[in-house]
Length: 277
Image (cartoon, rainbow, N blue to C red; front, side, top):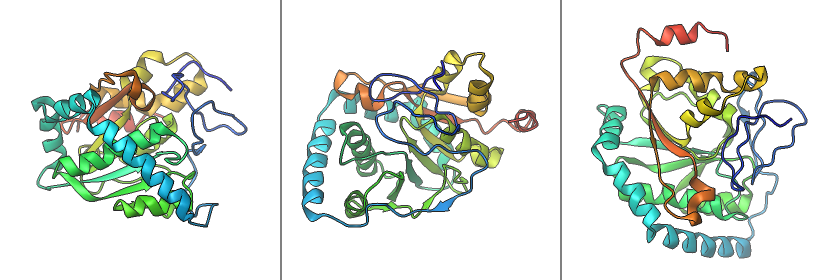
């Protein structure tokens, strides 16, 4: 089923992935087709063997991606935005009395097969190196990850989750959710799991532009249902769009934004919760 609301993909198209059976997406990598009622499930890669030769090649690919990102105008602009008062003030609000944000990456895709996921991972690793407010360990999950990829991620100091959380992680402490080009239902799952003032204010989210969802929503009831919580969250979201600067990074980061959620929403949030999602 094709719909008119779209989310970014590496081929430049936008697609809202609805949790319907049998739908074949046109994204650069497979994503979990999550029904709202699904629970978190233990996960193990279908590919159980770590291949040392593949891992060595992956390491070389990642080193190339890291160097390319680190020396790019795109990364310079990315850092300048994060260090700007308007964004750094938002990060301080999320931190509160804590000193670090736990980083969680959902939907990274196959870093062995595609350049865009390698660029996205490179940014996450570089953020950890650049800012002391990023936690020491990055938690990562995508059901497409192979044993070889998981082993390499762990060598970088990442933790590959053993449970498919369906992006329903409760922000019990300040958390940076790094979710570039994830599917719409994963953002909705994250918001639903944290739909209370003392949790939303602990979240920094890097991912698809919520404003873009709102601008492109159609009158299709199924599309509206798939994005309803995102649209509702727009009323309490401070969004800062990034600049891709170069075509080299368009596929990996186009229409991506930083999102922060207002802490002064006590009178508004119950109205949203009472709506039927």
